[in-house]
Amino acid sequence: ALLNDWLTRLPTCINRDFIDQAATEFCTNLNTKANRKKLAKALHAVNRNRLDLLPFYARLVATLHPCLPDIGRELMEMLVKEMKQLVRRKGQMNLEVKVKNVRFIGELTKFQVCSKTEALNCLKILVKDFHHHSVDMACHMLETCGRFLFRSPDSHVRTRVLLDIMMRKKTAMQFDSRYATMIENAYYDCNPPEAKRATRKERPPLHEYVRKLLYKDLNKVSVERILRQFRKLDWTDSAVLKYAVKCLSRVWLLKFSNIHCLANMLSGLAEYYEDVGFRVVDAVLEDIRWGLEINLGRYNQRRISAIKYLGELYNYRMIESTVIFRTLYTCLSFGHNSDGSPSHLDPPSSYFRVRLICALLDTCGQYFSRGVAKKRLDGYLVFLQCYLWNKDQPLPLDVEFLLHDTVASLRPQMKWFESKQEAQAAAFELQADFKAKLEVIKPVVGDRSPGEARTWRTSEGDDDEEEDEREEEDDEEGSEEDDTAESGAGGDSDDEDTVHLRGERKHVPSAEDDAFVNAFEKMMADTVQNRRHEGVKAPTVDIGFP
Image (cartoon, rainbow, N blue to C red):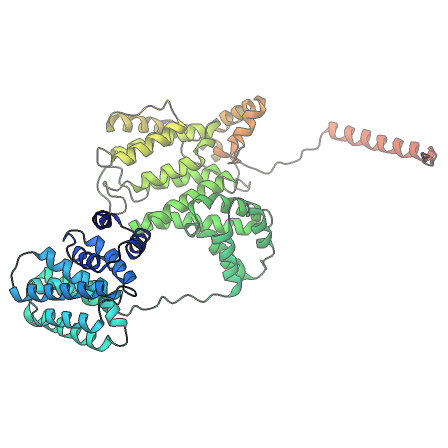
């Protein structure tokens, strides 16, 4: 009864601890000659569909083999006898039984319960009769213990000879594709091809240190420490400067969650070395443009990282909102045909640019909530909907949900157009308003003399100068919270988002200036005269006694 209960629990031993515990229990409580024979028969009669139990049963036999060798000997005699009978019958039935038999022999071979000579003899029988189910049996046996036999010094030669014979028979006998694949898999599982070792690029110690600081050590806690280490670099050396800018620009080598840490560190570094910030921003913008030109799927992760990095640079006041909006409009217009005709740079079935736009707006879009920046973002969302209507409809669900989540966080009350014509009408209306404002500005520009220095910064959705000044005055009269939100992470003001005509202010002398200068000089003279007559008082020392 005890043995029957133990044999009933045996199929549930599906890990090493359970099977070792079962071996200990059998050796201490059930160790009789009759029980050992029953155990060998029970192990041999394992279900043909429970191939997962064979490694654990082989471990059980190997654990008991030093003190109870007759179990392993009797089991091997039954398995070898059964295998020879199955091969001799040449029947095409009961493939599961044949596979179970050879895999059990292979597991016992790895535990050295079955000798290598006996395993090689079984494999030789299968290779000699290399037809139909014998091919399956040989391949399964090689997959189980083939590498063990091939790597062992005392069986390497014979195993290699049998493998070569098997491959020659594969070529000569013209097996079907299933058998050919099985034979190749078994062969390369035993003797895998030599793979070339990946050559590690040798870098100077300084380069390795820079990469370690940025790509391994950088996180929220270590930003200040790494910034101090970067300030210690020899920035006068052009080679060091070039490599540092290269590493600071390759943001896709960082963890995605640490991109804002790199932007934070760069903003601190730019306070001491301005040209480093300019170089990195130029490199990031160039990489974004390069991604739009290449448009290959394997660079998608790199492109997402670069556009998020650009948004984080805006959050840390490294760039202005004009750069952000210019990038957003570039994503809509570069290589895209507004008439809906297909383009190889932006085919109608490609929605990755929408993901880029959502990533950039999720990063820094919350700062476009006031002033002219708000109007510019509202106008951009209209053109974005026109862009979406030129894509294949309906949009994929993941893209649609991503887009709605992004817009809901920025403009919860935004109106979604129901048709392409409605979106185009709104876009044409925005363009007409912009052209009208340009017509007002053109006469003012024409009246300026060519010698005056001026700077133009124009973008879609700009207001004229007078309206901008009025908005700036309204913002100055607002609360401190409004001022903080307006000048927050982006650091832009309304006058930076409109057309500016900057000229050198000329100083015109006036009578008020002369009166101010005379009064100031008189006040300074009186003060000097009064100080001359004041006596110098010695300071009194108040010492407290204990």
